Image (cartoon, rainbow over all chains, first blue to last red; front, top):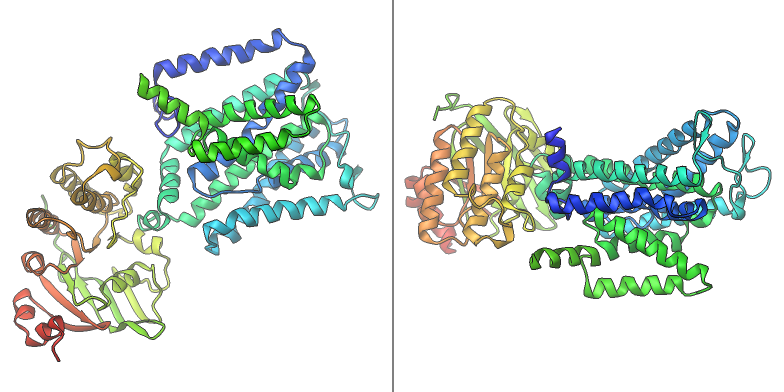
Length: 338
Length: 246
């Protein structure tokens, strides 16, 4: 237990020590109390910000810690969502349907990312090509799903739905209890927390250290006796599954999914969250994902057509003035002042 | 420290190893064999193929033909990390410690314990390097904050952290002062005395004379001459290739 606590408090993410954790748990209590002050609708909207965090974590792990930029993590977001919709939709009325849907979504993510990762990493493709390949992959998936309109594109009794996407996807449920509104908010919050602590343990463990070594110098790490292709592949699969978790939460939240979720605009968003917050820190990604999703949502809901332009401008400003991410650099400044 | 006793046993060898880069011959029929516990130095003019030979031994470069054996196992087709796992350790010519990580992290990543046998003695070697090179007390420092000599020592210690049986050091004293070179040589000699096989590529002849049991002279990718420090330094032919005389 003490070992685990040491790993959680390790130095591979910003934020360590008693003061940090006191602040962290204070904020966490606010998050837990938040639904008592707002309507179920607002709690559900806030859950949308939370459900995107695992995908941000996934990109943070593969890009920030392993040094490989994936511009197509939304591919796994979409695949997991569609897989859940197909399985849970076909098992409608069966209380095990959503759970099997979740497992199915993660299995699909693991298999597809495993195959993709195998060809990318074992063929020793240069790092700079990987963002292009991942983007092309997600755009191919989007194109494929767009043309799945019509009754011939049916899996069991579930229609893929083409451009309009898949609708009537069931909520997540355990037994007869369905997660929606307030309960869905808490469900997302707990998943984010579990993943956050799990990933802090991972990056501060031996595995995390080697992954960081790969980011710093692939050949040096390999010449210390590590099978870096395998480790890159495993890290890619973990990060794809994290994106998949976001996809699962998304379809459980909105009960639908469209191919545009795998499009280029969506593909850019997790890259922006990580870059603006700080790609080497999970805590920064949490902060940036919530704030940027809130900003985007607020601007869009007020009829502002330039939400994406504003978010894009923020990315450019960050890359020029805060190359390591705004949250990370603010945190470092605060530590220096102290 | 206990001594390793199985010397006179070939620990690493090559048979008719060839490698060409376009029209440049980097290795030509190289037949090298190094015994357990030996301190071998590879010398030769620039472009003689010394670093390429290290790359071939580790699998960074694939040989065009020929055979490499480590601990009597054919490794020619094995991947680099598989060869390393047999007990090989490589220090690159250009220092490749993880610059943005702390000394502690550099050593922790390197602590792969690839060798399953002789763990005790391997740990002793690692501890010896750690204390002699004064890296323990500097643990929190980032590698990029270290002076050049410390960086070289860090990379040597990183290799020892993986508990190798054979250590390949490509110019371990490059850029060091005379005192630092002498000190590095003395530590390497102490490590060798524990039975660790060390193969070094060096240009500093005084260092080579101080540490080597045997010297191999490479010239244009071929083994030109082999012998003790005295034999090699007295050889007119070796002097000729070093001075560029015909």
